[in-house]
Amino acid sequence: MKNIKTAFDILVCKMPNKKKSTQGRKNRAAGARFELKVRSSLEKDGWTIAKWTNNVDLEQRKLIKAKRKFNPFLKVLGMGTGFPDFVCFKKVGKLYEVIGVESKANGWLDKEEKEKCKWLLENKIFSKILIANKAKERGKIEYIDFEEKY
Image (tube, rainbow, N blue to C red; front, side, top):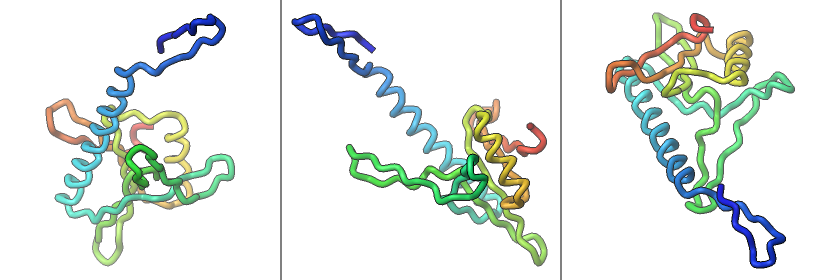
């Protein structure tokens, strides 16, 4: 942020740095590309995937509908605010296995996300939650079970 002083030297305005805005746009686009890659990888493994549109309210300790994000500049309403990112179904014998998948390029969850995962598993919303992250080998995706890592 740059400080700009007015002619009267009374008001100091902070202007956003263009580089940070551009970097944020690139990071958001990279995250969206990684989510698509995770989705296609799971579909190849035989999973049926849907975007998870719910979230966990940790104060009330209940499942709530995720808020939609509105971008006033592009005039679009985004759907990607649920946690975890995907709900996946796979038929195992006569039953279905239902798991949640959170896409994180670096593989780390913050404190709030860890609490949400614990709540979802304790309340048997998902049988397990996988964290998808970029593997050391370029272009590969690694899946880590939340219960094993934390």
